[in-house]
Length: 115
Length: 114
Image (cartoon, rainbow over the protein chains, first blue to last red):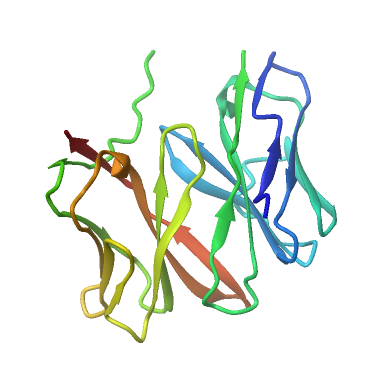
C-alpha cells in the first residue's frame, strides 16, 4: 500500500499567486481530510469529505480557500490568491470512517511558503 | 515582529526509561481515542487507539490508559528509545451531525536523551 500521496512536497510562491495542492487517498478509503499545521495554531482541520461530498468545511479560513474531490482517488486544495499567512504544512489524510473505530492515515504533507 | 508560536509541552526522558505522555480531552461524548506520533518533517502516524468502553489497551512497548471520569488519556512508552523522539498527539472522535468528528490535541514533544 502506497499510503496517502501528496504533491508537491514543497511549494514556494509569491503573494497573490494561485496554489493548488493535490492528494491521492488510500484506495478503499471513503473519507478524506485536509489539515493545516503551523507553529501558531497547531494542527487544524480545514475540510472533510465523505464519499467525495464535502461534509464539514467550517475550518476553511476564508473564501480564498477551496477544496474539491472529483472522484474517490483525488482531491485538491486551492488557495487563490495566496498570502504570506497561508505559509504552513498542509496535510491530507484518509480513512474509513463509516465505523467509529477506524482512524485517519496522513500523507507526508506539502510545505507551502508564500513570500 | 516575531510571531509567538505554540509552546508545546516537552518531556525529556533518559534512554531506557519509561515515558508517560498525558492528554486531557474535552468532550464526554467522545467514543474513540487515538494517539499519533509525528516525527520531524513527516505527517502524524497512528500508534494506538482505544474505545471508550475500555480503560486500558496495550501494544508493542506502548500502553494507552483512559480515565473517562476525569476525561484523561495517557500514553506510556516502555524502554524509551532515541527513535521515539517526536511530537505525540492525542485525538478524540465523536459523532457530530451524523458523521465522525475528530479533534486533535496540541501535542507533547518527547525528547529522548541518549
